[in-house]
Length: 290
Length: 130
Image 1: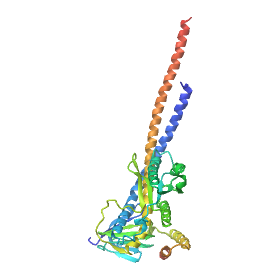
Image 2 (image 1 turned 135 degrees about the horizontal axis):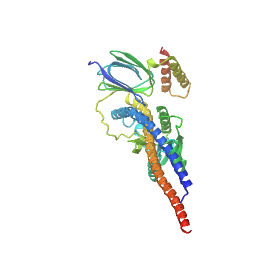
Image 3 (image 1 turned 30 degrees about the horizontal axis):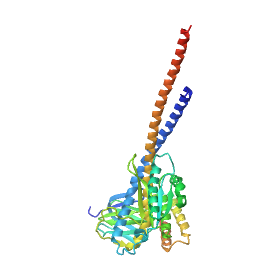
Image 4 (image 1 turned 90 degrees about the horizontal axis):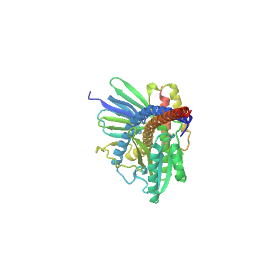
């Protein structure tokens, strides 16, 4: 059995760990509120954008000559995956969930004999992926300096994706991120952004629009913007998810530390009592033998 | 009352402005300025750098935008833009900063004609502000 001194030290160390996790939980809770707010505020933009594009693509007259970003290159050979993770750890299963989702997609793609290219956003994803998929990662971006997710960063990623598309480097692009449902549930998502998937059940009005200039021109102007918008949406959802995930992870850690302190304290008291009893027995048996 | 329509301006971060008492909105559409009154036909267009003017019964406000998309449908005007500034908040230093930034952009010789046009337009609009 550990000595009394050792137990005392362990209790102290667990207690100080608990203090840290508790503080991290508080910080995450405060940040979560802000992140959640901005995720909610950002939704109208991406929804509206989506709606307009849907209306447009329905109204487009010449489907064959539609912009490639909408209809695809006609091939399905090279897949680009944008895996979006956080830059910091200690947030429970947040990063591993995205990676797991991404990895199952990766193996599906390579089983089908297609080529895979990866862009990682956030350093944690890069750390986890580079061991197995190191040579597939063509780009690694990290926004450690930016405090909050902002559109400027998203636009950078979006422009990079478009550049690569125009250079013919890939046919299909999918982004991976965590959708924020609530503090304890975040759902890893795989969303295809190139070519645009139009299977969502948004109610499309039959109303005809006037276009100025014509549909094609608007679409080719709008689609690149939409990619940045979708990436920005993913970033917002991700940052809310990260904080939520961290908060519940730290909450668990604090609780576990508390349980551990209780257990150790009981053990400490027991062994102290045992030492006293032992000493007493020694004295009594010594007195008896006289 | 019946001459009013709704407007909503959103940027990626938040809903920038939402009002229901608009009499007329003038937007810098790509092919020229466009005034929108109630019961305008449904239209989608995109914006070039310029001034959005919103006129209500009580006031008249102007905003500087760099780009965006407008959609008008059922007397709802939606404007999506990634950068918008209320002109009353635009002071001289801010304006000069924007002009400087755009002029630097304009130096890039490899840009397409269209983006060149847009940057020039932006500088022009900014310079015309007082």
